[in-house]
Structures are given as C-alpha cells and as structure tokens.
Image 1 (cartoon, rainbow, N blue to C red):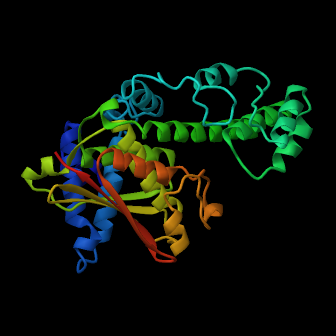
Image 2: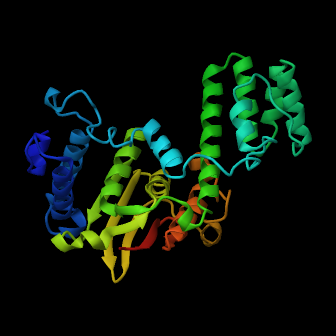
Image 3: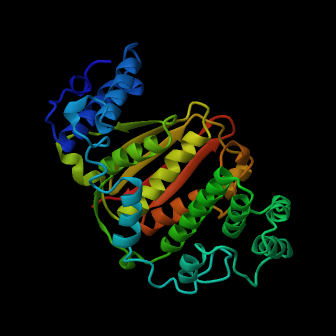
Length: 358
C-alpha cells in the first residue's frame, strides 16, 4: 500500500481537520457512483478508505506516536470515555431515575447499582413462576437446575441475562457468564437511552455539531468494534459555504447512538457488511441516507420496524433486542427531525434522516 498521507495528499504533520477535509474530498473524487465510466474509481476509492483508516488507527509507523487511535481517544471517543461523556456530561448523571425499573429487576436504578454486584439475586414481584424458580435455584447454589429453567424460557429480559450470568459463573462457564453480562449491559444501556430520548429538548445538553465530522467519528467507533464491517461516506457537496448546511443543534451522545444503530443495522443485514452513507442538504434540512444492498424487509416488517422490541423475520441473522430502531426514531424526533425507510425484500434498505440545520 502507498503511504496513506500521500494517498490523501496531506503532510505527516497535518491536523485532524486537514486529514478529514482531504478524506472527504478524495471520497467525492473517487466514489464509483460518481465515476461510472472510470474502471479505476473503485480501486482508488478503496485505497482512500484504507489510507484514512490507517492514519486514524495509527498504523502508519512509529512517527505517529504511541496512541493507536490518534486524537479520537483524546476527544473522548474511546469506549470508556464515550460512555462517560454521554451519561455524565450530556445528562448530568442519572438523577431522576430513582424507582425507575424498566429492566424487571424489581428495584429502582439506584438499587440496581448496588444489587448487581452482590452474589445472589433479589426478588421482583413481577417475576414469572419460571423466573422465581431460577432465582431461587441461583440463591441456593443449584446452578444446573437454574440453567435448565432459564433455557426453557423464551423471553430474554435484562433480569434473565443477570440470572443466566450468575448460573454460568456458578457452573464454571466464565466465558458464557461474561457474554451474558455484556448482553445484559447492552440491553440496559439501550433502555436507559430510550428513556432519555423521551426527555424534552430543553432538558438535555445541545450544541452545534457538524454531521460530517460526527459521522467520521462514528465510522471509526464502529470499525474498531466490528473490523469486518465496511462503511462508505459520500459527501455530495463540498463547497466552502456548506458548513452551516450540515451543522445541526444536537446532543452528541444521542446522535452518535442513532447513527451507530442505523449503520450497524445496514451492515448486520447485508452479506457484504456494507453501509453507504450519503450526506447532503436541501432547503432547511441536512439529509443523511444510510443504504445497504442486504436482505431488505417485507411490508409487515416495515410497518413494525419502529415498534419497541420488534425483531422481524431476520432475527436469526444478528443479535439484538428490538430497541435500536425505536431508539433511533425517538432521537431523530427529539432533534425535530424526520426519519423514513425504503425497503423491499431482497433489495436492500435505505434510511433517510432529515435534521434541521442551523
């Protein structure tokens, strides 16, 4: 591979803004859709993508320094900082969630913080007979019996993953226990974010955000977690006066979640794991199109796509809890935007998000 800085046409001392600007320009220059008569366009485009990834991941030699993610981690986009930024700075902590129990643990959010680290499981009056039996088996160290009861249950709530993790740990299945704990965490994070998306706009931290800059950061986040995914960004307008047209008043954490969910949905349900994101504007709207050439959706799946906990007929293709799309729509609506979806079975899916620019 050629030197990535040479591919993007920037010096090794270039700033992050200069690198991103060069990347956007090269994407537009070589995108295959914009160069249908150039047989070399696709190879050039792939080279640009690889060069940008190499620079942001620090894979260009020792001259990049010790931080493998360049400035992204310093800005708070590493996984740990990303969560802290969204939950603490964006919302001022979890005040107001006392007694809030969307997870089926039988206690408020404050109680969850204390109860999760304890050995054993607390009682919930809303438990099904099977859940109560599993809880009792775990509490009495009868982990194999707890495992059998849990495996017979169809629903997978946060409490189910909690008890499953304890049962697996008791049986010495540490890897399975860790996986269950991670699934529980993802489910709880999704429900918390869903609750926060119901806030009024004046209750959350809003700031001016350039969508192209945010999408570049989201792309880096996703590719670090899923190296097999492919994400192409196409900046349809690159004139100097475009900046305000693709800048919105928004919450960084929530928009990151919404865009991540839409891109990952493209990739998860596509054989080539590819999401194409087009950025443009029209009138008062900044417009984002998230497209794939995957399995698509039936009319029934389209009708229920934004229904909380709905998984559709393709749930065997990827893990999930049916929260991501409902959450994405709530976040877009919170930002006074609109979201639409166009899809046919076997023909792929396109999500169109319109947000009012500043």
